[in-house]
Image (tube, rainbow, N blue to C red):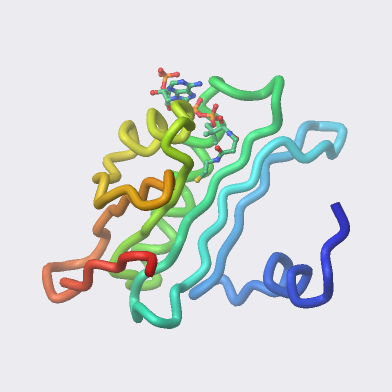
Length: 130
Ligand SMILES: CC(C)(COP(=O)(O)OP(=O)(O)OC[C@H]1O[C@@H](n2cnc3c(N)ncnc32)[C@H](O)[C@@H]1OP(=O)(O)O)[C@@H](O)C(=O)NCCC(=O)NCCS
């Protein structure tokens, strides 16, 4: 898949506060996982988090381990919370997000929206994808 300039910038230009990514590499430098978040400008304080683990490396708690660090970073940066989206039939994502204490907010067009509050109750926003 070829990325255009905008996509490439979005994925690689991180400020470590409103956008952050953690990558897992093997000893040989092969990338096997990335967990990242990016702030949702239309919902101040909230960020979308996404997970990917390469086939052959799944179900080894890699996503869970990276997420714990990413969540700590988000808390340290004062983020209110995360939203995460997955296809309704994606049992792995649903299982992972349930295990990580995300709540299902709703489903639209086969996409499930989940949310986890990190900040205090003043962060009362309930982001929903239009
Ligand atoms: C979803 C994904 C990131 C999970 O990564 P992972 O490293 O395998 O997840 P973990 O090993 O940390 O799993 C943690 C928990 O999630 C749940 N889980 C993970 N994979 C699962 C599966 N295939 N079926 C059901 N539950 C699953 C389990 O509760 C698991 O705990 P357990 O192994 O002790 O039972 C990985 O399957 C993936 O990259 N899928 C393709 C991309 C994707 O769907 N991303 C999510 C969109 S936000």
